[in-house]
Amino acid sequence: MRESVLERIVRERTAYTTVGTISVAVDRLAEELAREVLADEEFRKSFHALIRSMARDIMDQVRRRDTPSSAPGKRRRRGQRPS
Image (cartoon, rainbow, N blue to C red; front, side, top):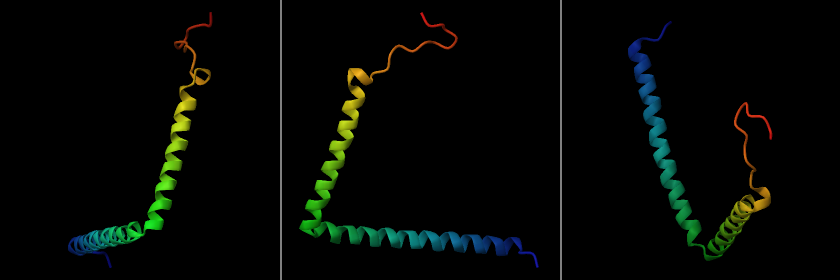
């Protein structure tokens, strides 16, 4: 039997509301867990070291791109022949 318009609306809105409510609950639990984990001094030290290491890697990549040897040469315009 085919679902009525009213049944479809009720099903969709119930699903939407349920997902929204669960999403909010998951966000709250994740924030609570993050606060608990960040309260652990040993974890904070390791976490900061990881972030510093990644930041250094990113800066090294940026510096390598900015070196003269990696700088792109003049680009030819479309249809322009090399000189």
